[in-house]
Image (cartoon, rainbow, N blue to C red; front, side, top):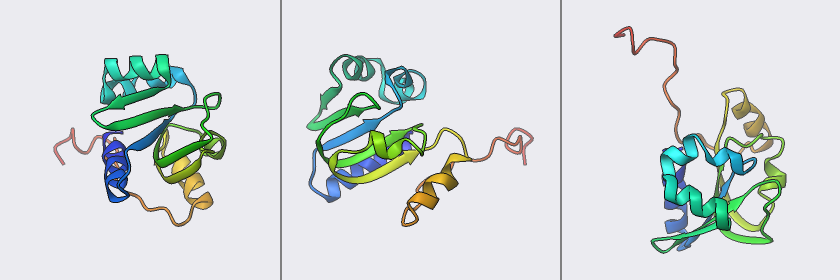
Length: 134
């Protein structure tokens, strides 16, 4: 999630933009990893106002029910079902989508629909090799 936000920030800077989206399935998805990465105060404002101005950057919350007609900039899609992604990220002007899949099985589905995508970060597998000292 942190790598996705940093990538989104870099994309905004490349395009001299100051607006990004944060797409989640619904507001309850702001708890957990999103809250851990962004913090309580950020999540509280997004939950209340669907928008946050933070150090010159505007973050818009997008869900199946919360839509924007226009959003000039990239979107971090956090744990969004790849089959519902187009519905959630339907704003005109979206420049990039940085997907954080919920499960490894979702990545091939997304890549099949968006073959020009590139992987920017992958967590190490949780297979015990690190804990075993390997």
